[in-house]
Image (tube, rainbow, N blue to C red):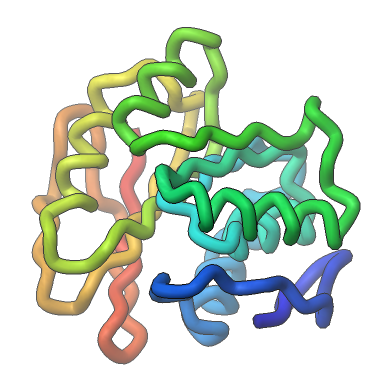
Length: 182
């Protein structure tokens, strides 16, 4: 897989086995939608897999990124990808090797606030909805934050979840991107 835009455009990253990566088409569409919002933001990549989405955000000007995944093999690949791109500055990068809800609690404890949160859990297990509920209950969102959930086209997310309201839905084949705001 290659980074498709920004400073790292064309650079290859490794993929951990057994994950479903976000397609190039969906990544390109996502960052086209976010293009006016990405510069300098604090970006959270939940269920990060290879880290492609968070790395793409950094490549396009995000100021910092945090990556969350509970799979040790995935975290190992993520660390290799960050190293390949010389992204190791602890003021820019945070890695949480734990489940999303547990990581959200840790993030809230340290007081981090995110401008953009990307959620890409395994499809078909209500994990997107459950994590949106958890996010709405935490104090981790900056003013005007946006949350993006990547889901399978047959999943249905409510129009509002806690303090979050759906503001946009975009479909790309079998993949949907659902955008929420505070």
